[in-house]
Image (cartoon, rainbow, N blue to C red; front, side, top):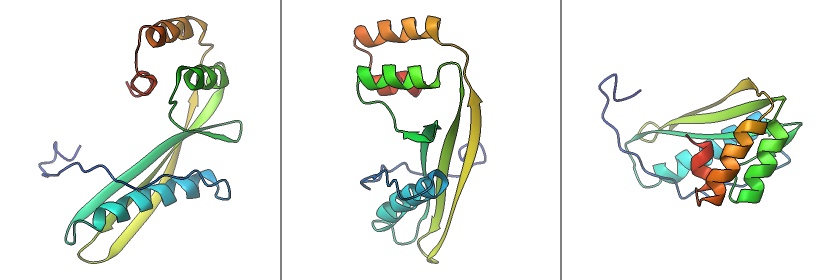
Length: 138
């Protein structure tokens, strides 16, 4: 989106250690993680405007991160199959030069059909060596 409006930018992954803090509500957690990522990058760039974000799924009041293994991918698909879940994204815009910061969170409700046929495809991809993260990030 930034490219489309003619803004130049660099992508720099944050070294912020994400922690799922269960004492925070999902929207607050998403904002806290995106803020932590932005602050970690800002420490290396004193006059930059930084945009950071974090996204996760909430299903049946449980925060679900990105799956790291085949077993986690299967569990996540079973959990969301045939029901609605929330996708929550926290984002932070930080102006390091002016020391200003804004964090917000947005929620999208996603309704998923029964995934029996899709699950068979995903299981096959996983058995064939696909990275579980890449399947969910397509």
